[in-house]
Image 1 (spheres, one colour):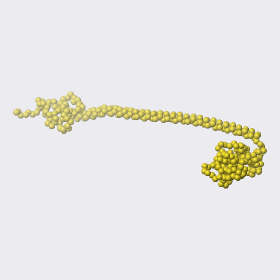
Image 2 (image 1 turned 90 degrees about the vertical axis):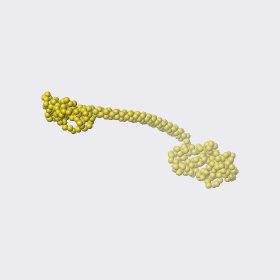
Image 3 (image 1 turned 135 degrees about the vertical axis):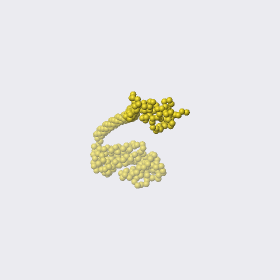
Amino acid sequence: MEASEEPRQCPARGSCPVFLAMSSGTVRYAPSGLSPIPERNCREEHWNTNSTPQPDEDLSTGLSAVSVPWKSLGPSKGHRESPGSLVETSASRKEAQGEEHSAAAPLDVSRLRSSSMEIREKGSEFLKEELHKAQKELKLKDEECERLCKVRAQLEQELEELTASLFQEAHKMVREANMKQAASEKQLKEAWGKVDTTLFSEFQAWRASPTLDKDCPFLERVYREDVGPCLDFTVQELSALVRAAVEDNTLTIEPVASQTVPTVKVPTVECNNTKTCALSGLARTCHHRIRLGDSESHYYISPSSRARITAVCNFFTYIRYIQQGLVRQDAEPMFWEIMRLRKGMSLAKLGFFPQEA
């Protein structure tokens, strides 16, 4: 083999842009993957124009260039780029990055606007739903208020009608009472025209000083006209005992019990059963019996005899109330009540009495 000749240098090494880029450090060899770039000094090497380019020993095949902005080298040959050009290149790189950031800024603003609009739309939908719910509840409350107002109006109307009805009823009752009072006064006036003024004068004199002494004119008349005839029975001895017991308020009338009672003998009439009246001597069913004072003897009486004794007892009870001051009325009502009791004695004497007697 021939001795190796000295390697020839690249004739365009002074003006080759690749060489200049490698010399300035703007272009480096890089592996085809993403592995780190080994640090090597790009220095001037000898080039063989006849040989093909060989890859470096420690680097992968292929040349990848880092994209950087290029600056025109100018028409002159053999002129290497000055350090000022490198500064300009770095500034150009920063300007490019600033442009990229300025281009990305409108995109971020657009995203923010889109997100803000979405949030606003969701908030608006939520507020619309809440407003719809509130309107629905308000409508229900309005309906309830309207219903209650109708109920209140109905109750007020019913109350007014009831008040009017009660007022009319009260007015009617007052009118009827006034009519009855007027009729009573008219009857009283008519009755006064028929009443013996002497009898009323006697009653007024007795009322001024009430007493049970039968010698006073008023009671003497009543004894003679009503009490005597009403208690005048067939059995005179028993009749006198009954009159005395009535005047002393010691007579007792009680219904007949079902058990057997002792026999009581009367001088004129034998009353040994409940089929004969002890006062009249007539065969009557006796439902009551009398007892005089504290005596243990009982006398069976008929319904007619009981009615006559009861009428006289009612009269004496009323005049006792007047004497004790228990009757607080004017003279006229008292007088008419005494006239009613005297009428009862007269009817009982004639045999008119209630069936329950």
